[in-house]
Length: 261
Image 1 (cartoon, rainbow, N blue to C red):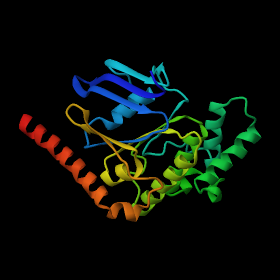
Image 2: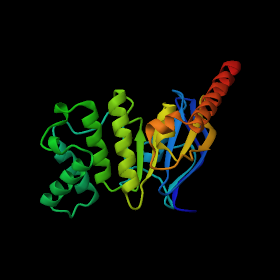
Image 3: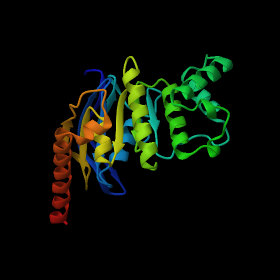
Image 4: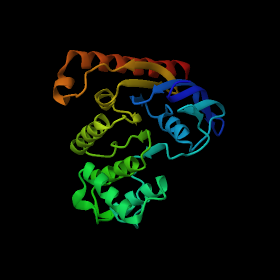
């Protein structure tokens, strides 16, 4: 099996309700995949399965040739709610991640590396502050810095910008792409969103989940060249064509649910 993430025949149920059904998905190493779907389609559940925080009733999940049997440092996670330790300063939040990934690293080296990661996400002025002293956008940047500090080759992001205002959302989208494009080798990213524009702007592929139960109903390549100019992309005919195709796919799935109800 090739390097990357592979899901084969993954089923997941909760309290007798089938959440995911027969998920087959392969993500090559270094690819940026956006996972799109309506609420209730199981996007976040799928991400939690890949993170090893929940387990399927059937099917296999494999990362880099090894079965996923629980959480692991090779799979970093960024949630929408930031998940920072409120009693620690921002720099210490990052330092803990470095210590967990590389316990032999000395304390002074951890702090120095932590400051470097915070600079990468534009938080050099907030190094000594605590999470409650930061805006939502700043806390999310700190959460991204912590995930990067783990050094995980696979980054799982569960609607990380969903609670932000449009300006900060766009800034963090651009920041994420800048960090991902500059890295060697590139991280593999699976990014959950319900925003079609965000999915197309960020991804190499858009995987669409239908709901009740969640299943893959489309897997579309996003062939817009990198580096992407937001305004030019959003004004292009190719963007609008792909956007309409996705909208039609989601609408057809909604109609199917209504007919089946």
